[in-house]
Image (cartoon, rainbow, N blue to C red; front, side, top):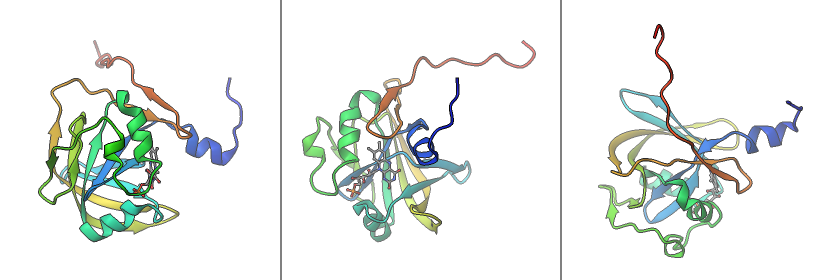
Length: 169
Ligand SMILES: Cc1cc2nc3c(=O)[nH]c(=O)nc-3n(C[C@H](O)[C@H](O)[C@H](O)COP(=O)(O)O)c2cc1C
């Protein structure tokens, strides 16, 4: 049964969003406010608060990676989303043996990695929307296991991938 929830809690802490990690220079930050906005060119928008170090880094470097880690690494995702700067990676079991061509960190254990170039920003509310062109992608050979983030430290895995019935069959 549905019940009316507090507006702020409902709007920020109950939407399931796929967790990603922004790699900018050496820094890694957890991010769940992201969406594709164009297929061709392949373009993403990500929302970042000005108080986060990544905000200033992205304005400076104008490029980043988007790393989609599997659910099994939710503790590391959470750590990337709690600390500001510093060597976060060394506090996790994760590895970063590669860099993109702009020298942004790539997390080896990712299901998928996008290499991104900043093309625009948009201010409206308390997050800056960074508009990114995806110029290169890496995909892991292992089946993807996205981590859903619900806010307040809550994570969930996705179940089996199923295909809906085709119209007319
Ligand atoms: C799973 C998760 C998702 C998050 N999503 C965002 C987001 O989309 N935008 C944002 O500005 N902060 C988000 N945060 C908070 C930042 O990751 C957090 O403030 C982080 O410490 C910033 O790191 P930095 O200062 O090194 O850039 C998220 C935190 C977590 C745990």
